[in-house]
Image 1 (cartoon, rainbow, N blue to C red):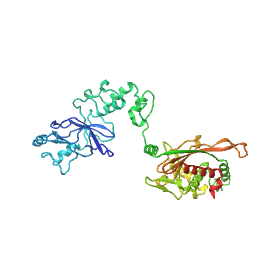
Image 2 (cartoon, helix red, strand yellow):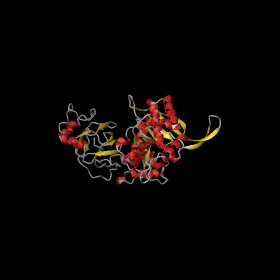
Image 3 (cartoon, rainbow, N blue to C red):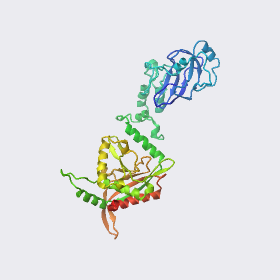
Image 4 (spheres, helix red, strand yellow):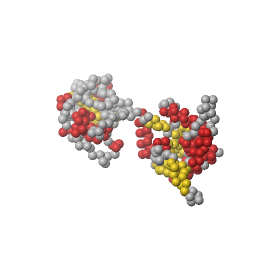
Length: 440
């Protein structure tokens, strides 16, 4: 079984083009294999007789396993005397090899040695290594890739005009047919079940450009799909009055000491105060200051708050460590410095790994409220919306206007139950409504 890439551990034999006893010449197609990345035909690099098929069609074998034996001379006659014998997996010490088959011959039949010049009949769209020409097999006039694309797009290969060598249907023929074929019916199919070629076919009549996924976008996609599929999310939304918080921010900024050049030592943002209030709330409700660790829950002593920072093509969440112990000015300056280095992609792993909870603030974009996806293994994330002026009822029954913002807490129900989550968001409301209390 040839190696088709560093991440491919096995291949599935989908078809044998030769039977035991057939004469084999170098370049003859022996079998077709399929992996999660590619479908291809594997040619022989040795001449002789196909003495034994060890991995029948429909079965998989690990890379490097002997899937067939090619013998020559008298050994071939002896080896094929019982061609219907039960197929075997890779050779073992308890199973003797055919007398006339050398170790070198066996390895040559299983894995071609060195690169082979690409044949025009061979068509594999993959960055992985090619293992030789795939020639026209008896009864086959469609390349494996073309056959797979046709199956995914629901296209009848019998209606496709071939343009490949010797009248063979190749991938470009399928793609040309897809542009004129009726759109595939996909109403019942989930998006993840559709191939890239099928999705592109749906939008064939509109202009688009393809953007390759970089490492960050791949990681975001993997982790957040994992989070939504494996974490039992539930959500709690509350309105928080921030009038006093805004007043305290303005007074603190006005009183900030200035350097010789007149630059203030700090300039607090609303987000800085929200970080402090969230850290204090997690201290007030310590059972929620925790993460899921598969067979246990880790409860933390300090509030390490991760804060989502938007980047070109993604986001990252640097962590403010021991946020409950730090002054507002320290949180503000540290957050600015971390955000700047995050956008320059100069953060160290220890500056964005871990964290007991995350804050995602889209208020500056005018978003009123939203629900964020938990970043595993954390158990909570606080989504913060934009501040607004809203009419509220006063204690005496009158009406007044107040500055209000909406927050939504996403919880992992394995760690935080509904009542515990409600207690946590209530503690946050109180700290924001009376911000002086989070400083004492």
